[in-house]
Image: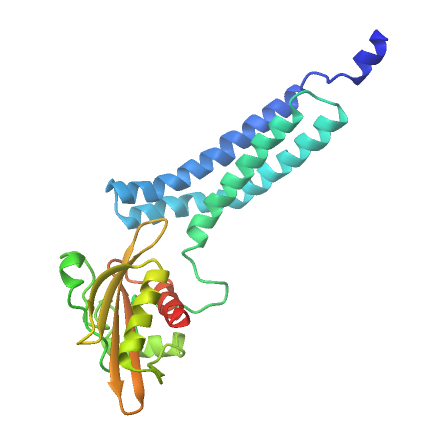
Amino acid sequence: MNNNNLGTSQRSTPPLLLILTALAALTGLGLALFALIAPVGVWTGWWDFRQGFSILRSAQPFVLWITLGCAAITAIVLVVGRQRAAAGTTRLAGVAALATIAAGIAWYVPQSYLPGEGVNIPPIHDISTDIAEPPQFVDVLPLRGDSSNPTVYGTGNPNMTPEEHAERQREAYPDLTTRTYDEPASAVFERALAAVDMLGWELVAQDASEGRIEATDTTFWFRFKDDVVIRIEPTAAGTVVDARSTSRVGLSDVGKNAERLRAFFNEL
């Protein structure tokens, strides 16, 4: 009877599984903390966003291998631990799996700022559906500060003329043009306000008499603040809507301002 009990009880944890789990925790969770330091430093003002991106780039060569390694360790711990009926197998596998997820997040953070493979994103950060007469910021201006990009369309990149800026926008985002709606301007204005609210933007100003709405969108990881102005005008053909989104800092927005305008018009 005692021999049967000994045969079915769990055995001690092999040292190799403990070592592998510790290695996964050290590399996977450590990598995640390293990736988190980059935006935290920007939030707290320890360094600017350029240094934050530099920190992320320094970790990128190792992220894929660490993530795959942690995943492999998770599988090894589960298989070997169950084969040997080792004590604490589930707990160790859980730690390794957590490390894998953490490493994956460390990979996702910088990837979320990059365009898809094969996508041509121009080095611009100011996107307007009306290139000839872009909507103008008014109430947002005092919030941008002296160190922000200029709000004159096409002047944010010293290596590019406004004409080149406009041409690159047309080539990259041909779908972002003036929209016309059959509804009265007052109804479209209210729908635009509702869209701003649904998208989670911070409403800065609304002026129904001028048909102008201004808002600020804050990105998740690095807390970048990008400003939006919406212009709504009644015409003989219907209500015309133009929108503009521009980044406060950086020469390139990796396509985020275009995505923001698309999201607005989809919501509208």
